[in-house]
Length: 484
Ligand SMILES: [Zn+2]
Image (cartoon, rainbow, N blue to C red; front, top):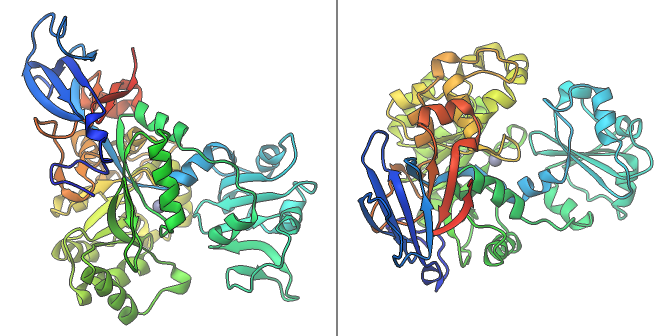
């Protein structure tokens, strides 16, 4: 579990595994004096004024010349779906901005080879609501499954349905036409599908390496609700060195779970407008989790989900660490309630750029000013942190920071500009302690040597909108990425 200095998910014995690392000519703040930082056994052991020639002949096993760059605590992505992110790297992109119309979708799905085609990121603006017949018109001879961008729906062609073999379950998630035939649209059946579709081997190495290049040293896995098998798989990826980052996993909402090598975060609640629980029921579920000593993290992407959550937390009584995930729609009257209940909001500014155009078209006019609010929350004293929501949002946290500052859609349209924040604020959303969002981590003696070196000022890196300025990334005193 977690120790109070902020070390996450350290395996027994791991702290001794990293040797001595010396980072020379670094700055802890912009315009500050140059320092040399020594990391030993995974922790920051010393920060001293920079000496020319430091490290030569010293005990350091590894040396990193920061060349005057800034050292910052490693970024923590507070909301990500690791397994899906890895799968998405091997998937066809089926939605904007890559695919915009049915011709583009046809091109994307015409893949050489045989076996399943897995496509992700579909949005109805491409070719309307898709079912098996629409997909059959594009691909007939091999099984196709297309995931809606919401993550809630898979759309299969007839070959895909046939390849599932056995009867589709009698589940409300299997949409059927008036003759009882499945339409190919499967809602919230990921777990069942995973047991039917031969799983492609999924590995987190590439997700981990890309994140390391962006300065990310930790993830909060946001579910769906973790099964023991899912947790074991994640931990296995870490143990086998496929995942270098620290890992917090949103906890199950019921029962205790065992998880060596990772820290449990709050319990994740997924709400769906079509099947919202009643106020009493949700209040009871929040109370149960709170009694078990755990905070809640509630998926709120609509006005209805937010108001229900706020009402239930008001009834149940909030617990420190309770948080709103996404906060996609936050009407003005909700802001003081969030403040009074002391909830944190974990926002996803990357959607401003990635989904900005569709939001401007799809979201009701009255809710437009409430979309992915940021500055209003900050000014109300509410704790804000950020996650990428990869693979549903862009995986690079610098894209999210840039979006938080610029508030422009991919097409360059201004998008709630009054909700823009400054670069240090946007960066700070990724520097907070994943188990105590109100606390901003610092590089300090005794703290974990989880950090990155930025080769340019923060404002410039955020304006650049990519991890290009990250010169090196260190996790547990080990260099996991270096530019030079
Ligand atoms: Zn998510």
